[in-house]
Image 1 (cartoon, rainbow, N blue to C red):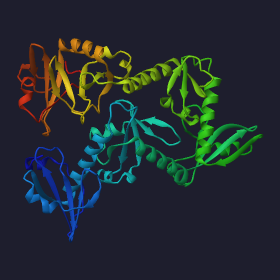
Image 2 (image 1 turned 60 degrees about the vertical axis):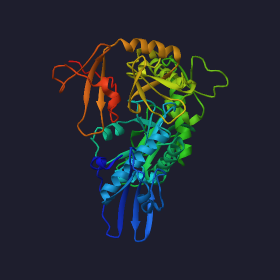
Image 3 (image 1 turned 180 degrees about the horizontal axis):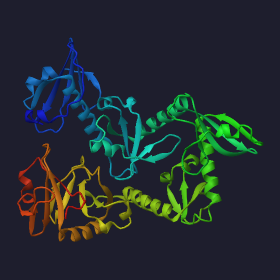
Image 4 (image 1 turned 135 degrees about the vertical axis):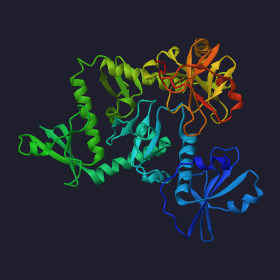
Length: 456
């Protein structure tokens, strides 16, 4: 980073305190600042890549460091750098193409990312286009929250990547909030057998009304306790959340096995009883359960196919091995292609023994600098698949996108082994160009292959 990049930082809300000053220390050639330094009187603290405020002497060291530049910043401007540090460092630490899920904490305002305890939502991503929000009670629901933030449709909230352990802690905190602040849980029994779990708002004026769960789908609105108040053979017991979740899992099992004549796609196998509330947590798919398969659920053919694709992705991630010093990934249009990696529309790789530096295959012997695959569906592949996919891509017409970090700079290139063309706007004519060919002379360029159609 140089002082010329100074005007490209995002600006976030901040209240200037006359007793507090901020200084951002930039490092020549580095994407991120070294630190944001805060001075309160004689006290100096720095927020560095450790992502916490610590005692500092960095300002006194600046004159002896020729690659460092110290720039004073207003509170809002300093906040922009702080948010960027948290966002980028966490992405480097916790986003892995080998994990079953990527986890993200979502915050109501951008500057809250400095304190993980302020996160109000947990999102997991098994693959791009498959985001799920934790809804409490060991259940997950589809969400577009991260996409809304990325597209600028949600201008207030922000999200950062978190570790699996941090996700587990946030998951527990969300459950605790449901139990202690939102709902009281009751098991409704008929003739001694659990029939449903009813949730009653702790606050009668809450936006969350009475809900019920009977094992078919998720919670639905309904004041079940009033309906069964005078029903014969019916009993109601208030229980803690853990007990309610156990009953909910048993209700799912009961409803599924009652419909097993129609659910002939196979059986999902789970490690724990409560996992039956989350089909994506299944670790195996079998046609006929074995005695050691303690927790199973019958699935429809569509559910079984979806789970088969998810398990195929996970197995490939766990079995990934380097090929010539790199990990290779087929880039797929969607999860539907997980069982057919030869359908890949692109191929990327990263070194096996260093921090990820992602490269995009152009043709044999030529790999272009590309961005991390956060918004791609990737499948780790072996040497034979790499050979087949590179052979297919090398002779294909492809559409590449070039950005360089400057607002508004974007070029779309239609590339073939013999030519490249670009155009101004989606309706403009394609014109010969020489962009991809000069990528080595443009160190700020990042080249991606989006996979969406650009032809008209």
